[in-house]
Image (cartoon, rainbow, N blue to C red; front, side, top):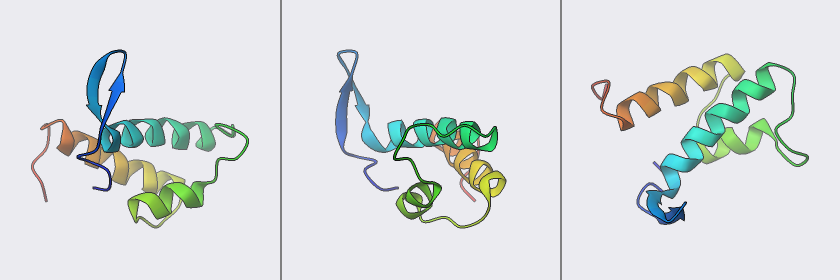
Length: 78
């Protein structure tokens, strides 16, 4: 994953920039699916380009949620 090993501080705790982007992108895609634009300059193509995925919003959410489960160790890497 892109930026997976780049550290960043969140509430005085170190976290991975890639993990943060994954979680926030899932949230943003779900908002987009409901008809809400997460912020003024947000584009779904930016999310697809960043993660290297293709498909409609439902497919993108499915792919990113699978990646999140794998990152959390809930699912075997396929």
